[in-house]
Image 1 (cartoon, rainbow, N blue to C red):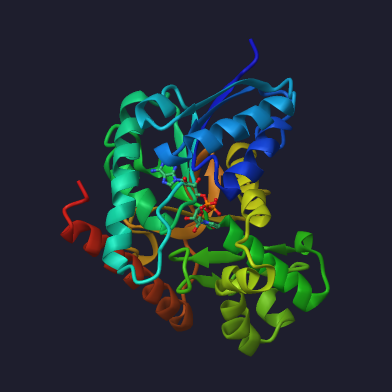
Image 2 (spheres, rainbow, N blue to C red):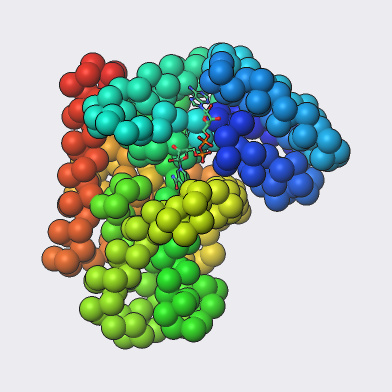
Length: 328
Ligand code: NAI
């Protein structure tokens, strides 16, 4: 029997959803031999738009697409889901306080986590894209007590790819020559793209690029890349986000190349001094489809301070959500 995948995509009528679904239909996401059922979960006000996207998806006439459903009800949307990609989120609007943003998103990700807990398939894996992605993933996981916490991740492969791209541009080499880059912390301006353990053409990265660049402009450029793209393009990073979502899935299913690792935000088990339960970006490898944190990396004073600063932001977000009574 051929294996099939049920994918639930929230925010399916949005920009990322619109770009992602056609790469699912073409087989780029799950491979050319894996038929897919697509469940599009949308806010009630965008269900009609999602139905339009579903029509276009049908018109892609992909033999891999078994069926496409649209719903605004998480309990229908996540029914039998093997993979949930949570893109739909409440964006920050002018004058909105951070606590209002966290509260609005907890109102989305809490019920979605509870529905995943109750109706998703046994092997469900959840990838959160909608911001604040780390804390949204933590909220969803907290509402899904029967699903192992490590199944919930937030995307930081985009930041990882941005770091690879900056290194390739700086050195004139290919991204294929670069390994062991890490993005630590929150998917936000406080993130820490770390070259301390990275290799460039088998040489320690800090012997190839200068330390002052690695500790300053490199970090700032990677962390601010999303804003720079909005300023230049007049729109947010959509295609590169979709590429990163596909990379994240491939690396989890097929494994990370020997000797390398990737970055993903997953629930902390206390590794590297990150408080347990926070969803933090770590260096990870995939073992039997589970993200495991790479252990034993030396953390020097510079890295410690950068990691701690980003973790402090994650703690603040967690405490704000907890104070609102939105964490179980
Ligand atoms: P968009 O605004 O085009 O689409 C968002 C969609 O989510 C809309 O169709 C909206 O109706 C839907 N939505 C809102 N509430 C919902 C709910 N309760 N249930 C289901 N759907 C709901 O935004 P875009 O460009 O697609 O980005 C989506 C999110 O991804 C944003 O939060 C953005 O900040 C985040 N993002 C994260 C990245 C990462 O690396 N983690 C990179 C790029 C974007």
